[in-house]
Amino acid sequence: MQRQITSFSQDQDSHWTARLDCGHLQHVRHDPPLVSRPWVLSEEGRQTQMGTLLDCVQCDRSELPGDFASYKRTPDFTEMTVPAGLRADHRTAPGVWAKIQVQEGQLRYRVPPLAVDTVLTPGEPGIVVPQVLHSVEPIGAVRFFVEFYRALSL
Ligand SMILES: [Zn+2]
Image (cartoon, rainbow, N blue to C red):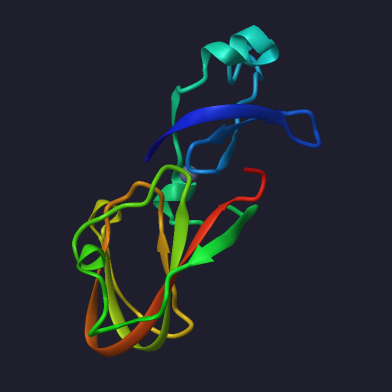
């Protein structure tokens, strides 16, 4: 899916990488004649690319960024107390990932934009991708909570 560039940094090999608003890093090399991105070589040039959209396949695969950490969690919910807002299509804010952790029972997890329709169980968490519509539905008795993740550096 398309994500916006929010900053640039260099990796240990001095290759330029773009941080996207989902939290993923993507190389933006200038490697002519294969890849031509002369703008990446100057601070001015990089500034002109802020907000540009790049295709993020890591988001398409629901991969939580490696340098993200859990910072809060919901109370435990059951089939009796699951908020209506979680049953309806909803989404997290930019840069906010989450894990749906089932402790007992089963929870249906649907993410229509990613063609995901699955059943979460203990040990099989659901990954929530920033800004992507999703919903949950208890399958009988269930107990679960949602854990939120964001970049450690923010
Ligand atoms: Zn991404």
